[in-house]
Image 1 (spheres, rainbow, N blue to C red):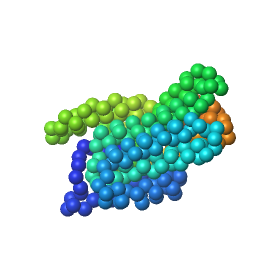
Image 2 (cartoon, helix red, strand yellow):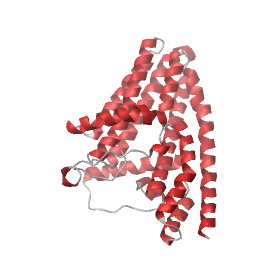
Image 3 (cartoon, helix red, strand yellow):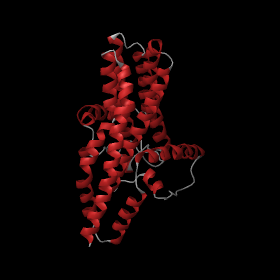
Image 4 (cartoon, helix red, strand yellow):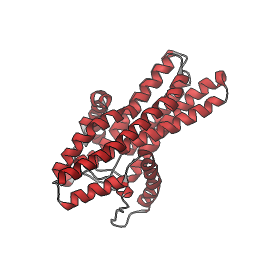
Length: 311
């Protein structure tokens, strides 16, 4: 859940509409399946007064149960149960952010909790598979599970930051993490001790995301200068950015957790969860490095084109 600390409803007592990712860069599985289910759930949760953080915690519980199920993957019924529980986690993971925006209960604590719940779910599933495989392959399988989990976290954090960058430059949506990248600090009224603790937790979480994303300070400085100079109208700049970067963001959906969920299920159902660990460590890393290199080249090319157009 991304946003600034705050509670309460929208002005006039009416809740805000849920804010979703731009559809042109969204994962097709989210667009057609996960998010429609989340969207149907959110108004009911709001009517019942459920807090977004409680939704995140419920999603984490589904993830923990999925880990227990995958520890028994040799029985296909447990594998199907694990897959169903992970789908439930995805739906709740999509619902908590929508609910936070709908009820204006966004916070740094919610952002951190959302990320922690995601990591706990992934750890639970990887541990469950490692428990099942340790008797067959020995202790080294724990190292394979740990490395897989680390790369999973890095790839997903990198993907999330690419989407935040796109939301910033294509639609002007504020990003606390990208503001920190630029050395900007947010000032506001004195916060409660709970908000101060949440901010203290959020800063290292944010730095991890930035460190994995391959974002360019120079790119953001030059884009900001272009906006302020008036050489190009803001909407024209955003439209150019959308045209240039939509194809790249569509490629980044390969880093989505959805495909990992499907991969784990298929490999476990085939009785080969070790094959998933191997692809996580090798295959996804190759894809990730290629995406980072392509994004870096695209940013450089985009800046050159802007300078030519403004000249």
